[in-house]
Length: 290
View 1 (tube, one colour):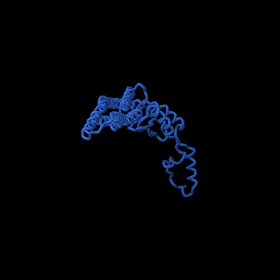
View 2 (spheres, rainbow, N blue to C red):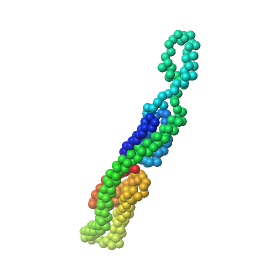
View 3 (cartoon, rainbow, N blue to C red):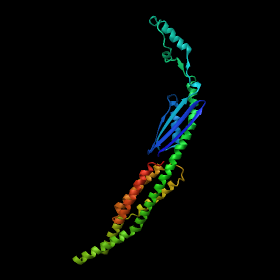
View 4 (tube, rainbow, N blue to C red):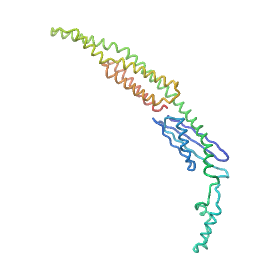
């Protein structure tokens, strides 16, 4: 499911910003982009995302801007003095004018005003609550999209149920129609050839045909799958339902295919084709549902 969320705060002159985007994906995949000095928080960010989101390609962007005086790096005077001393001790450089600005980039001359651990801990305290807020905004947007998807899924399930009821009402007539056609053909053959037909053979043929074309079990299973889908869409479980619905859609398609292959009736075949079309639409939609 697609979604977007963001949150920001300013604490002691430091501006923190967290942005989350999600795109459709059958599985969960996350990308967390943190400032280099806060890279140690990546595992915590991903863990929190997994707790809140179970499906989708999720991208998190984090920015941090320090506009306070504490952002200034401190000059390590002893280290700078040692560099100058060494340069002055070289005869070829003794009379040269030293570029102090360039020397500030020498290793150890500029040092962070606070320890790395302190900066990381401060970032953790401020960024993790922002991540929760951004997640809440993203989930809210995904929920609104989900309501639209669920409404469409219910429409498709209702359509399938209507067509399945048609199949259920047509199924008994298939055997009776075959029996009438078979008896008619046999009567014609008997008149033309004056042969005798054993009634037992006729009954066995009709029974074998009824067994081959019996779709009662398929109708029963498809009805159960429809009921389970509706139960999941009601949200009573409180758990992610996308993958379960995906599996149920595959099972429904299998039953619809079996009904189409077992029944020779044109009306039942038409209903099966229409049901398969609706199930395909369900399969597409549940890929976007968490």
